[in-house]
Image 1 (cartoon, rainbow, N blue to C red):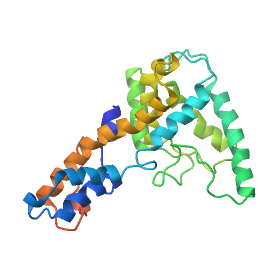
Image 2: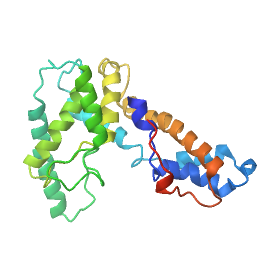
Image 3: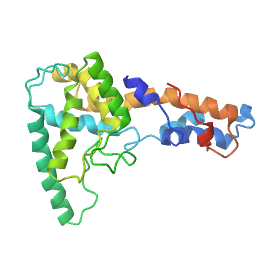
Image 4: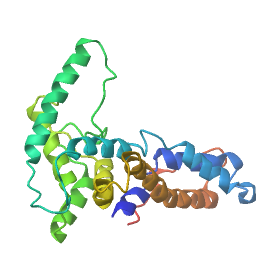
Length: 241
């Protein structure tokens, strides 16, 4: 599930633009000229803190919320934690922080990682369909993730604390983060993995998965791309799942 979420590329994905730009600049109309290694460097230069790094920030955020809770097993529904209370406490403190920053005239205040989305917004209750798919599948298979449960509580608490005018969606970057953190929680809790190792694992995992998707983009653009043109007509795009 984790790799499947990361592999996927839309036609406008920034990392895909980087690798397609590398192919396109060499000239895919003469495929022998294309330097594939340069196209992969294009993929790497087009990933960063915003594209690929949100999972890093989400894991750091979750560790701060759960470090001192005594959580042993993130997959156990009987964890004994009051997630709503944890979410409410944070939402109230964030509401004060946001109000203070706006009063100071700071519009670049710290944003909560992996809630809200530029596409999935504008409704009273917003959802990222990718998160909904994963949550429904987990429920069907009896898989529980305390971190995902917390995120779903958090977006409601933010609305109730008047941080948001509607209920934000939990976006797919949060899903990636909560799955990965659940996998490594035992190692982190026992001290086998440090904070930094756990946090950077999210970005590294993103790179591994997206590398597969970008290899497909490179191959596709070599075979049907045009010189100095990274565009793909919407009519030429199809879903592969």
